[in-house]
Image 1 (cartoon, rainbow, N blue to C red):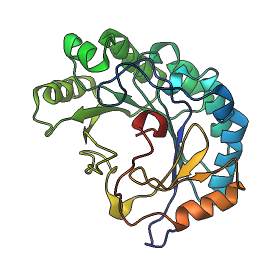
Image 2: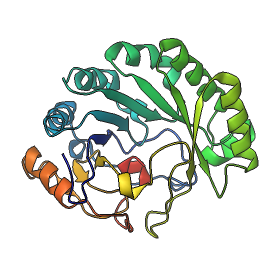
Image 3: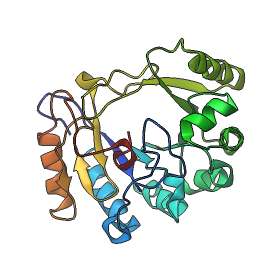
Length: 266
């Protein structure tokens, strides 16, 4: 399917939860957030049914995000449900990696093809500071488990302040080169002020070629991360929500004052 700017929209990012086991300083306030009620979060059946409709409209690529998707109970089952939808060519997940050691093999068996892992430094103290208490060794174990399971290529998402030449970013680059991993540098974004840029080593942030729709954990379909526009898939037929989202997809991002990274998926 094509939007009004002739961009082919074939990528669906699905946030399955607003919950996370870390409190990264650029993503979530230290005191935490007001969580969605369980009844407000889409069920697996709803997610799978919507995804099946989206595939009929041309979606070929699906990424599962959060929050932290691995804290969603039964997440492996959802991966299997989505993997079973004919027409999906690329099924991936973004995770902080903390719980990945215990899930990697089962995720692969369920049909997950590859994984992105967030890692902004390889220094244990800096990692604990950025994540407000995270244990970097758990992430290293998760990365190794993903490699062994065959969730490749394993890509590392590294958030930077200004440049990939920053000390922590250079640590991550060295770690990736030594371990056969791919790194993507993501300049720290600001939803409310509309500050974003193209991902170094990836395609995100390039409005001219944006091919994405985003489904939040509460069922809001968003045509753009940096825009407040959304369509509630619980209040309208799935096909109508998709057509409206694609038809109203803006030419470029502006700002988002109603959403946050932890409930949209970044």
